[in-house]
Image 1 (cartoon, helix red, strand yellow):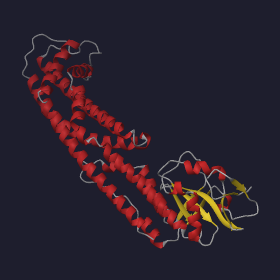
Image 2 (cartoon, one colour; image 1 turned 135 degrees about the horizontal axis):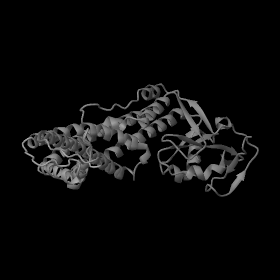
Image 3 (cartoon, helix red, strand yellow; image 1 turned 90 degrees about the vertical axis):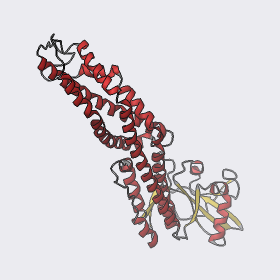
Image 4 (cartoon, one colour; image 1 turned 135 degrees about the vertical axis):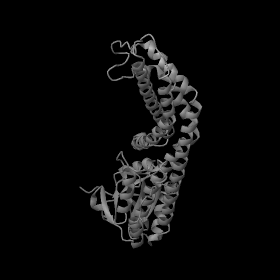
Length: 407
């Protein structure tokens, strides 16, 4: 059933309400809470249909593509291109999840009767919800029907009524007799792109470019600690031999002992590399999350961050392997020169601790090099990524200016 129209005198919004029943202005949206209008501007259609976000894929160190490609980007591009043909208008501003660029309409009707200008609000019960909604990335439009003197004077009258809200820049005024659909489509497209640009800028600001050495040093301190290396060495499982959790294995052959010790060192070094990569990933993720949790909803970006870190980790592990390769070679050669007369239990914690301490000493001597080379690699990756994200944001800004330039 169609709701009654209520008319307001030109006073404060919630005061002196007058109800009139002798007018029956048309129903915007045919009484529906949501309806669609076609966009007829050829220039706007051509522009919005051309919208795309190009993300560089070179150089390989960049993780910009991993950070940006995903559902948010896909939705933004699809929604902006859709606005080239049609726009969805909604009266249901009470809905909880409001997507950026969604257009919410508050309908009014203006009429001059007996020299009294009245402003009718179609849904006065939604008045406070509409005017007090604070979400900045939606589009709020007061849609006017009816004329007093002329359209310009009508809009001035309505403007004076809602001046304090319109002047805040959060509410737009449109009249149905004008080409309001194209104008509102521009506002919606602008806001959708602006919202995604904000996302890009926040992602860029979260890149820990100036925290690289702290990240690497913290990760190295944990993964390269003596106690950590001892645990990894004791847990290393050698085929046909086992680990410290297995039965004792006393080895009396010097050749076999040398082979086992070499294999143990290789396995331990491999575990250290994985541990270092894991600690680096966790440390980088902590920095991203710490900087983003105040500005973006983490659930909207966490998948992109995880994907980007996974890509970054691939290149980091390659670098770590090149750094650790000489250690494994030296370890294998050194163990071959040792002469053993008494057979140790290679699954005992005491024997493995001795091997672990040898590995620790070798790594400790190269720790500065390890931290420096990984830091340099990460810094380069973050710098390239930051520059590319800035370039994406600038191109989005340029597209917004192109939208604004269309009449």
